[in-house]
Picture 1 (cartoon, rainbow, N blue to C red):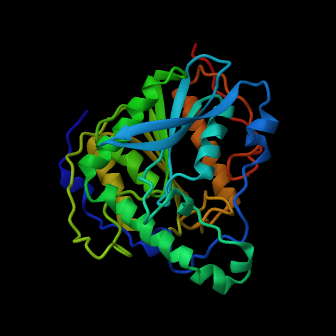
Picture 2: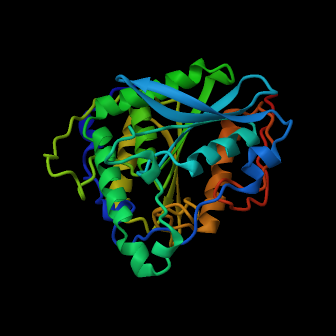
Length: 350
């Protein structure tokens, strides 16, 4: 591991929430998010051994409620931690963990936030009665939308304002995953969406041992969000010293039209990773906005089918490179419902 001055991670200020995920132009979904048929345990995995279980992790006296998905009929497999976007854990993230399990890995959906009166689990992906979301005006001005963004931003800032604590929190999930009997303790990766992309990059910067990380429309520098903060948020920020784990392979799936990742942010990322000696790659998807990998029915989705397909296949290709001896399975659609059109299989080492 190499030590890089903290200043390498500070040349670009955090993008406003309006660039990341709203609220400008964002509206409640017209239709609810639905789990893909291929990822419904009851119908698709009867007698196959696949299961989704509660995965509680206790940190600083509070027990967060994640999920783990795996095939109980096989031995320990490489594990992929799934870090959600700014909204926190929702059904889509758990479904993505199950998608990874059906491919042949173990998926762990991470719960980022405490459930509070201000931001309960029920408001992670809010959907009011259909009578209250028939028109665009209703979907853009509904009180649940404002409550969602206020709660989510304050919850995100509780992580982002203290990077050492954020890194300890991510370490707790990594260590919990290693203790599960379904997990190959020596082969773990992580993926993240939006805020989740910040989380996995902070794990890299903290020197945590991950084989690879994949960021989907993730933010490249970690700073508190600067819109819709609670009135008592004074802008305080506790940085952390970087000790990049240089054996981690880094894949960034970025939308070229993502206002939260301007050219200066990408250049700062390049300089930071090159200074640390990290193996990194950025796939920049043309005319693609922030939120391209979130499916319809998920708040702040800006779904782009081609970008989601290509980025999913790129992720699976990286995992096949990391773990070439692992036998994987073809899965027709990812958790967003995107038809993948092909399978990516590992090849055993000679």
